[in-house]
Length: 206
Image 1 (cartoon, rainbow, N blue to C red):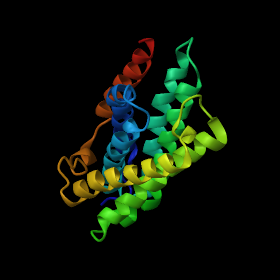
Image 2: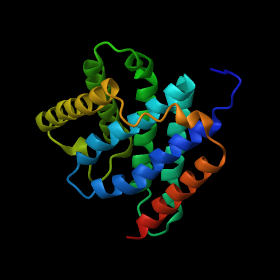
Image 3: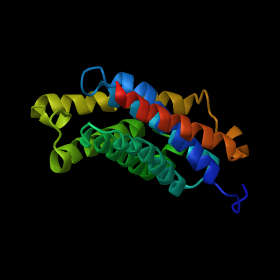
């Protein structure tokens, strides 16, 4: 791989896809009971971030794509008459997820014990998110309000779901885009990011 190549289009493209997924599927899933969306959206986030890593071989690009997705989420602050916490809380979750994937991605690229690693990855990511709710943001509704035993049960279940989805995909990587996105121009990331911003802001009127 050419180490002098600019990875910016790849970072923007996958960060934009993640932001687009959050603005569409994420919005729908958050209509379900608390906790369901996280079980599904984190494996989707991992899919985008792992493709970033495979395309660039750079852990830093994983973090940068997370910043792009979080930035898209934060455009929701431009919409008046809503709680800023409804925007900031998921944006922080996106950043935390990218940090956790950053820490685990090299290990998960190796082919041993992938289900166990995916379980640990999912468990750590959700634990960090619940801790940020409890210690910093304290929203009116959140997983941190669950009693201790149901919360531990949820975290364990979240780890199992993440292990099943992420571990299976790593072993059978259907839809791996890393080869194709090394040929990105500036057009594709721009279109994806603009679409994500329009949908992120547009869905907040409903």
